[in-house]
Image 1 (cartoon, rainbow, N blue to C red):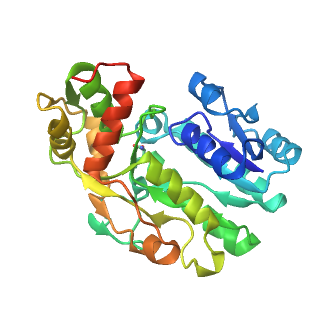
Image 2: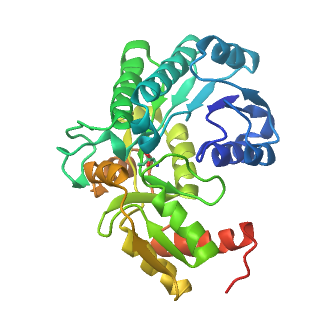
Length: 318
Ligand code: VAH
């Protein structure tokens, strides 16, 4: 079965449901430090409380459910990590080492996401290549680069089948993200539906890579099912669906809600994090090595987000 850590998070809560569809409800063990109401609705399959810094408990759960695949998502995201770097290092890295050790000892396939945050101010900013300079200056980015290196090490040293992607900002309507820098691109849709306007904490003209959650979930399953012999890279593949700035999302929303407007109240902390990241990354290795191809562009994502949020927030379509 598949063990998912961070199952109540932004990616986890939707990935568990998808994996249950693909592999069967009882073959997905959702775990998180607490059970969130959404996850409860979402996953009918097994759920276990797990603090990923408790390696012994993680091993016990993996043994109990005869786990052969570990999908490790539990982590502190960029903005929250900057508020407490020591906690972020401990949680992100201890959790990862524990996950890798379970995979090594129980011969599991292993997935954990990296991020565009694994790049820093000295990285080429546009068309960022798969293999390039990675000197992030956020603690989140430091844990992501360290994680990439550790996962490649476990593959070369111990033969663990580790795989990962560098996610861009992920946009979804099911479970709001917590503590990220790209979260403005999720909040903007919620505010459009609820208030008809949005004050962005990221400034005009700040380009970052983004992706709609359905494409992110498909990418995880596609990479994990790819022929390992064809993978030149492993940890972690650049993937992206679009490079957008707040005003691009504003225009896409205005297509459907003409009265919508964005104003700006830049948060210097999260703006500095965003400025240290690439404006657009190159995903050609993922396309070539395992057929990565996103389905949603900005227009299609915006249409679906607004439709689903109107339903979720029970707001009458204007
Ligand atoms: C964050 N959403 O903002 C996450 C992600 C690329 C961004 O790592 O921290």
